[in-house]
Length: 121
Length: 185
Image (cartoon, rainbow over all chains, first blue to last red; front, side):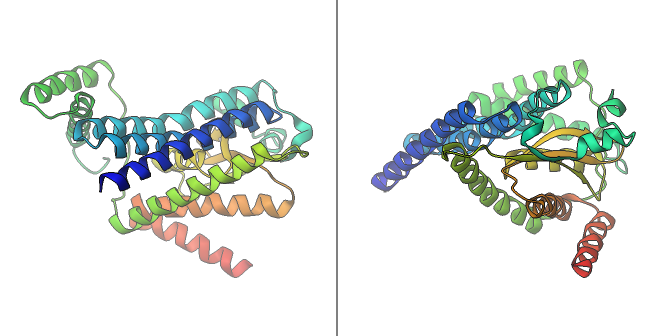
């Protein structure tokens, strides 16, 4: 039983670390801020969750697992907010590579007099 | 909490804060519960928040379905973005699409935006709260068909959330809309 948990722990830790590494590579390789935010929010969140699960399988004590759960909950609650704030700031300050956008319905709405940025102030 | 007494929301917040306080210490003791109550009271007095209008109810089965689908989406999204990050030779194209939600309440807007930000290649760049519209940046879009698929995915996610948390009327709203689309295609 202990052996199974240890193997699970190792698998989770290695997969989580790999995903975090790939997120870092994506952060460097993607062409603009908005694309980079995808790398910063997606593989990294799952990577952290896997690492937390790996630690949980290894420690196996109630007090540690509740702390790990808290970290997971706060990560899931805050990562989208951080990504949105950075993405919105980049979009509003025109730090977007327009040549990479297939279409931009936010700009279309702004042209049509329904500027979301202006409406929100 | 619109139809119920306002103190119900406050009570829920106190219970939640005490629970988190105890989890932070890693164990439930009388001292931790009392300390948690003191901190909860302080937080609620110093940082009063407007009540969240919650007119629906939680449905366990759709909630479970949403959670299961969320995990699947999280894994597939991570794999997709990881693949884009490692692939050589081509810069990923993207698009900003407008998705008007069918249930434009603050709660639904927030929950959908949160869940959306964590799953398949999507990032919220702008929110129009009055119109209940999310402007979503979608990664790795090649053609118009990809855009429409992304839009359908956002609406499907909204439908799953409304089925899990919305009122009966809101559920009817998303269900009616999805059958309309089915007929149109």
